Image (tube, rainbow, N blue to C red; front, side, top):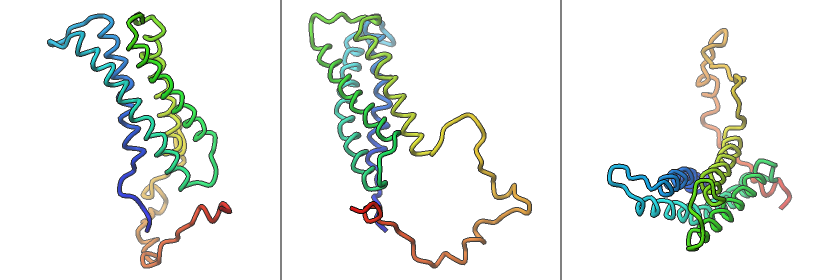
Length: 184
C-alpha cells in the first residue's frame, strides 16, 4: 500500500497555528512594555519577530505540501480547498509585510496602529479561517448539531462490526488510482 508515515502538511500547519497567537500576545506585551517574571521588552520583541519569521518560513512549505498532497488525493479543487489556498497566500503576504514594517525605524508600535491590528487580529483571523477550512476538509462537517452517527451498541439488536467484516479480512485492499480516474 502506498502511504507516507509522516503527514508533512499537518505537521507544518500546527506550528503556524500556534505561532500566530504567540506573536499577537508578544506584540501586546512589547507595546505595553510589560515585564512578567523577568521577561522584559527585548524578549517580547524577539518573541514577536521570531514568531512572525517562523510563520513566514513555515507557511511556504505548508502551502506547497498542502498543494502536493492535495493533488494526489482528489480529482478537483472544491471551494474549501481554494479558500485555504487563498488564505495561505494572504497570510504569507501579510506576515512578510509585517516583518518589513517591524524593520523600519519609522513604524509606530501600538496596539491600535495598522501593524498592531494586523499582528493581533489579522493574522489570528486568517489562521482561524485556515483552521476552519482545514477541519471542515478533514472532518467533513462542522457544527453544533448532532451528527447522524449511531454507536453500534445502540442499535437494536446491538451490532458487532468485527463479526460483519471478519469474512472479508483476507481480501486484498481495493485501491483507486485517482489520476487514472480523472483522465490524466
